[in-house]
Length: 81
Image 1 (tube, helix red, strand yellow):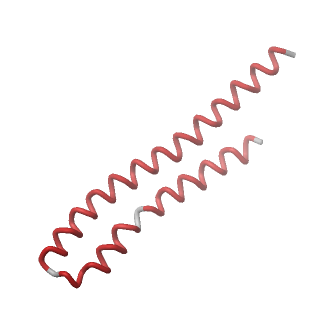
Image 2 (cartoon, helix red, strand yellow):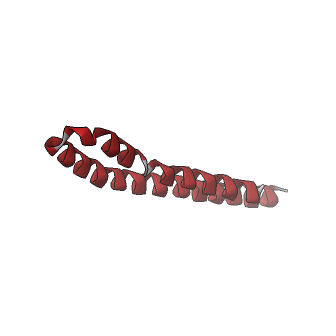
């Protein structure tokens, strides 16, 4: 029984690792995208202040990447269980 428990615990750890990688990779990608978009948005707003709304919307859009990573992590955990 101890061997079966070790296999179960090992696979559970791999599932958790895969879910963590899915979320962390998507979070790093979103942060990288937001850095570039935020820099460009601030540069545009320095020249035309009325671009604030568009800059804010464009800066928030990459957050959907993290939501996709969360969905993938939930699917990984759901398929394992």
